[in-house]
Structure formats: structure tokens, C-alpha cells
Length: 372
Image 1 (cartoon, helix red, strand yellow):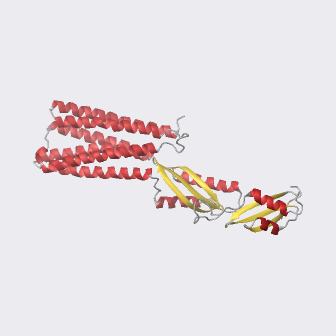
Image 2: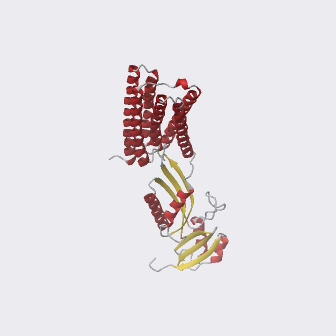
Image 3: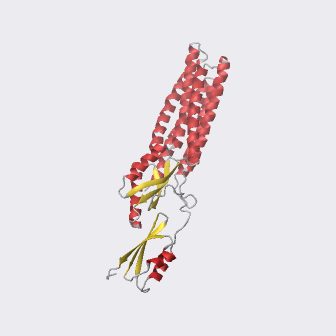
């Protein structure tokens, strides 16, 4: 059975292949009409449509590689390949916008550059608008469904042909009514619009590459979902980043300091499950269980370390009146000090423990049951 990542790769490939077929047929159609009508411009436009196949190949390869399962060298997966491919596509869109902008300025400066190709130009232009708009909406649908910026970029790449064809159509109408500057003005607007989309895609991709966090309102919504889990006292140190439309996060969860390790961990599991249920784009959650509020403490931990169990048990052993008596110690690290619960049948000297372990704050002596 195919995994979700394999299914996503198959969907992205299918959508892109359909777009590539349209690009190929449209390019051949333009070239054929260009030869028949002796239009070098139309032949050039057909070659441009065929060149779109190159970006389609890029999307197909990126879809395959970015959806491969995590491995030893890439434990977080390969989603950043999609981000890099989106950067490339965004750059292509920006170059297209620059080309259209340059051409539109040339036409504004010299209206004689405008070309009238007759009825053939109208037919090809309308066919280009209809087909590329259809591919744009088809690709956009799956881009939103898969939350894929790469497919989104490819959808807009398809739409650039549609928008430039609309500008050409407006120009042809302008030529018909002797308004020669209309073509250039329309192309100028299209160029600026495409440039805006390209810059937006480039900006989002670069933000993803430098691990920019989710917006504050999204983090607040995630925190609200987490706080609804019973037993959770607080959430802090929430860190998020995105990879190919997926969100990875880690967070600190404060629970009652007296609960068991397993109960604290189970509360964390419920928090993670609740977040994933409400936010499907969150695919990786690492949580840290805190016994107290350490939001103001650096995430590397406290400046001073308190003794661990071997040293504490050694001090308790020496403090027992009957040093052969069995005992159990429950340790609570709270407020920079130690609270101890000592379960034993023997009497012991609390002062001797405090001498050996100066960071002890409170010691509770519990009598061990005979069955123990």
C-alpha cells in the first residue's frame, strides 16, 4: 500500500504531466499557425510554450525526491527539495515578468513594434488563454489540497502564459481600433502582477529555508488546543518551522511535579494528538515535560546541577540507623532544590542527609509497609 508521501508524489506528478501535455500541444499549435501565417513572433511564442516543459520536468523531479521517506542522512525528510524547486520557479517567474516588462516599455516607446497577425493571432491567443487558465485552476486546486508551494508556483507559471495572452488579445483589439498603446499598457500591468506573485513565492521560500516560525496567531491557536488537555498546567518555549508545507514543532509542557514520569508522558501524547487532529499540517512534534514553570530559564537548563540518585541514595544509606534496612527514595527537583520522600522501616538522621546534600529543601519520611 502506498504511503501518504508516495501518494502526494503521484498526484503532483500526474497534475504536472497533464500541464506538460497542454504546454506541448499548445506550443506545437502556435508554431504550426506561425509557419502557415509566416509569423516569426508566433513561432517564437510557440517555442516559449515548449520551453515551459523544462520547468514541468523540474516539478516532477522535485515531487519525486521531496516525497521520499526520511533516511539516516535526512531524518526530517526531503521536503526542503520542494522549497528549493519553488525558489527556482519563483526566479523563472520573475525573469518572465522582467521580459514582459522590457517588451511593454519598448512598445510604449515605439508603438510601431506592435504586431497585427490577423485572425490566426486571435484564434491562437484565445486558445492559449482558455487552455492555460484551465491548467492554472486544475494545478491550483491540488496545490491547495496538498499544501504545496511548488505546485502553487507551477500553477502561477501556467497563468503567466494566460495573462500574457490576455495582454496580447487586448493589444490586438487596440490595433483593430487604432489604439496602438493599449497592448503595451496591458503587458505592463501583467508584468507587474507576475512580478508581485514571483516575489511573494521567493519571499515565502526564503523564510522557510531560514526556519521562520509560524505567525503568532497560529501559535496562539496551537497553544489553546494544547491547554484543553486535562492535567496540563502550561505550555511554553513553543518553536515552529516549516518544510515543504509541513510544520515541525517542539514545546515544553508543564505538569504537576508529583505525577509519575509515565503520567506526564501520557499527557504529552494527548497534547501532541490533539494538535495533530486540529492542525493537519503539523507532522512532527517533540515535547519536553516540565515539573515546574521554567519559561524564563534558558532552554539549555539551569546554571547549577543538583545531585542525581546515586549520590542521594548514598547519603540516605549513611543516615539510616540500620544501614542494612531496605529503603526507597522519591526525588523531586523543584525550585532549584530537592524534595525527598524516603520510604523505609528504619529511623534515620535528616541532618546527616542535609549535610551531605546541601540542596535538600524538604524531607518526608514514609514508613514502609510490612509486605514490602
